[in-house]
Image (cartoon, rainbow, N blue to C red):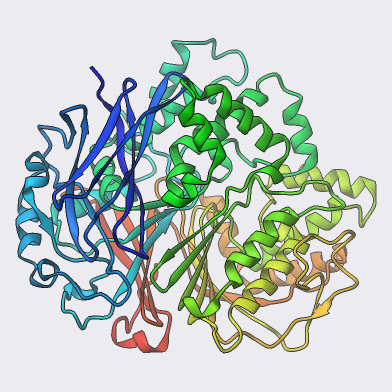
Length: 632
């Protein structure tokens, strides 16, 4: 008899019609999975098989726009979700109002919300439809209340639970959020959760996972205690998504995801030399193929709309095959060997908010004479996704697992290091530069100088003109702390490589270039939030703080002279932070207004709690909402 092995995860919700969603599950055996909603909506899908595991992505049709409805998952005629003994609230799907529509009576009245909040998941869809659609700011459900979007984001979640109950890195922010929302179903919820990389750690496994690895192979043989193949990747997702509160949270809050390095290996695709060294090992091919296969199954599919899924030839081939393993293996191997054949980046729309999620790992060009964060095809796609139809959005969010703007000293070190590796100071300095690049993780946007300049110019273009949005926010993680920074465009500064050509330019960054245009009218921000559950050594904390200092800036300018890098097209200072801890940021976007909060998970006598350490308006109109900020 088939059962539910993992999930359900609510992934995609259609913000154009408010009538469609997708739900991802893993079953224990081949079967047909059904999602049945209280409002009569639903959908079914047969499982597809990969490496002995069975998955389904169910498209749910017929949802009521502007409502929240409970749902259950059935295999055959047997309900497998919610669990019979669950004390958590019902899993729900919340849909936005279709453009021009008015809220349902249930949403405005809110009567069904209280009944669903008071019930348990064991009641299933009979608990009824809850009220309160996307971003009902302040709990308002009136038809005249402006609609909005609440976007929570973070990265770097090492999910292993300590066996002794004493967590050395502190409470998990995602678990703490789930616990708080489960305890108060009427509380303000995110409309979408952005997971910005390192959802799993293939190179840093827990004690529990190592025991499972040791039961199937010799850990004295490479890759040792790291993940070796697809089956072992499933252990990581089990560990990350099986926590009861997190499982419930992901079943009721839509999520978008993108990978970063630890989803595969630390410093993935740092350089051409790094890639050659890894490809020479006997275990790497299976690791990268299994990493991309598992990412496609567990994370990437849910990022896509039903229309995109219907047009995806790999998805069609995997579903059509009795066993899709070899189909998916070929795809993953080709994606690694020839990255231009696959696009992991994607675009999502949340009303008047556009999200462009950018792949900053697999799409790289690593040859030193053509080094780029994005290959030409990927860069062209990102440019089109950002600039197309600017009048259709008020806020542009760009998800980049790696920060665009770093503390200035770290930025200058990475740009200097890239020049050394390119040979600007000769072969001895180039060899030193490669060693330093790997040892110090110098592989962010600044380590790809032409790409940094082009991306900076793209953001300026996106924030300029009569149809410019109110805000352009680059959302990032990776660096195990949080901060806010805002760039400024010095008038008339010459910008190497900052033209509109999508492809990277050959040769060193200094020399030819263009003069950047006028400063943008939109507010452009780098918002960095990491980790969700991890730590950073005190020495690294001190280094990040020093990177913002005046002394650090002077050192950075000296390195720029030594590396002949030229000046960056923008200047920036610290607008908030750095904050250290397990944390999540939330953007609240309504009309052309924007506000930001940062919460940290802290341990207390009554368990972990989320403590607000920042509340700040990002647009002048929001001063009445957030008139202060607190920083630690």
